Amino acid sequence: MDPSLRDKYAIVGIGQTPVGKLHGMSDYAIQMSAIKNALDDAGLSKHDIDGVVTHSHMLGAVRVHHQRVSEMLGIDTAFGLSISTGGATSPMLIQTAMMAIEAGLCKTVLCVHGDKRATRRESAGMESVDEFGPEYGMFGATAHHALGLTRHMHEYGTTHDQLGAIAVAFRKHALLNPGAQMREPMTLDDYHRSRWIVWPFHLLDCCLTSDGGAAVIVTSAERAKDLRQKPVFLMGAGRANHSRGWLHGTHMTELAAKESGAAAFRMAGIRPADVDTAQLYDSYTYIVLATLEDYGFCKKGEGGQFVQGGRIELGGELPTNTSGGMLSEGYLEGMLQITEAVRQVRGTAGPSQVKDAEIAVVSGNGGNTVCHSTLILRN
Image 1: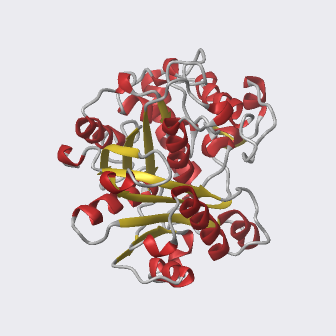
Image 2 (image 1 turned 90 degrees about the horizontal axis):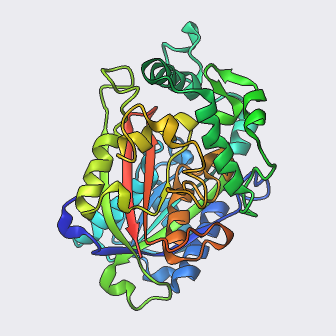
């Protein structure tokens, strides 16, 4: 985004629901609960919202999802949009809100994601897979991502001990989060003993499946001054797409994070060394490692060494996924990375608070690694 937009917009409210299996709630009940919590956090009423940007796995079955959300809320809006770019969607919701306000289409935007992914999968069995895959033994996202990790291991000598360091760090953080799905302690030995899903991925390399929802409210920095919460300014934003696919060129080992992150840091006018905490899309341990490299926290191929020795744990050089991440807190398409980043720079993250946190970077990565989006937030 244009550097002139730096700090011009702010997050003023966040809300989320429990995560796990929410048998007693419908998809819309989950979304409405997250929205209410965000409105309460911001000190706003639903009638203060004039823009709604949504994402849900219901999108395949529900057209104009943003309109249904607005209908459930009982509000008319000047701007509405339903978007989906896989795991890159959550930061893109925020970026879309910024662009809509900048264009004069609306003034205060509600961004929401929520659904019953875990219980829907439980009742439906295996998710559908692409054509020209299962007949060759290629089932699901884990097999797809395994190709990239295998290549990274071949090129750079990345080890399971290094991947395990990521899983163990995020589980340590989840133990401090009473809302996390996974609250059993985990050791590196536990990681190694977990069953294979698709080599080289163990079970504990793979993210959770969760029901749940989260909402974020975005408005102008000027208006944010008059609201309940200390504003969290949108300092930088970037996005990129490796649209030629995962198998093209070096895409398996260099994510679109490289271009997306560079754009966000350029807009923010800072370097990776200025970041206090990272909240990264961790659908797999490998995606964390590759994102750290591509964002410039270390050189390509050195991510394995970077994540060892407690560097990404609380108290380390770059505390990462401090509420547990998708590997241990819950999987809400990257929305929980945003809400945790906001808490960190507000200084309200409780036992997981990073000391003197001022700047946080957030990533989204999806479309089977094709799409990437980045946010940089500051207090």
